[in-house]
Image (cartoon, rainbow over all chains, first blue to last red):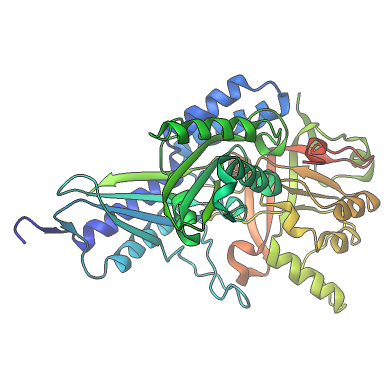
Length: 284
Length: 179
């Protein structure tokens, strides 16, 4: 096809390496600003102590080039391909090579194990990346976004197969149940991703992707934007607070994404990320 | 407002500290996470000698990132303490003085900690670069093959923690009851 461009393996590997370094060391401004606002507004002295420590942590990570968290997390690579751009054969191996290089360079803790049920031997390099590819975005451009997701908050993930009649109230109750159950262990203040619709695996994928949206940005649909606001207020009224020490800041934000679903279903995926929402994005 | 406390933590000092107090620790501690806990408890059950002495020890639930060149330590924040709950009563009976982790723990663990005079100290989860910058030295002392899950010995200074459960029933997470 005329004007079709294939990314090079080297460009993929280099981009992943740089993104992994940046995501691990440099807290994104939307997250840092949300923490700063929370610290300022927090009335509980213990919670404020925790929030101020997290801001200081971000400063030290950036200046000393120490990972924001010892938990490297599990890395997700989101690729958005505009029209006329394609990925080369072997791009997954190239992306893993980039992650391996970042792991050695920072260095990052190797946080993934093989044989989850029995041996659990450490893999040593944080690969494999979890890769999500979709078409979209600007013509001729490819956007690569990396997200590192910690294991503590990953353990708080829930899937609820609600029924269509459960409606927005059911979704709110599901989110509150997930946060009540594991919220204190998920390194609050957390960011709650909610996927509504699709099928079971699709709802989880939507919830995960919703974490990519900048904090404070509301869903473009008014009904969902209002639901996000209501759920954020409800989560923060639970009083779990920063580091689980109480106060008003249990979540920095709640994001909802939706997709078409089956006439019999209302799947709701809840994916929670710790305050160290590490992500970084670039155009290739 | 923070109280400076030296490690190891003697029984008398432990008895005086209260839930919610902010501490700055100085001294030596060891790390142990899921796999190290399992191994230690299995060795105790088989009557084997342990590779580390637990009596009077402060056990930090953490798996550090490797130290960058020219730095004493990498990042090292606390991991979720409740994952160690199945093993904690057994280690508490061995005379552990304190453990450091994040988040609340089971009622059974809380009872065992109090019964054996073990303090539960809480680190701020995710403050790993800050906590790592307060580590003066770090080395692996047991279970080397576990990589980040090996038992490390840390020497810390101005290492910030909050008293989670004290020895008289105080609980910094009491607001989570009935949630």
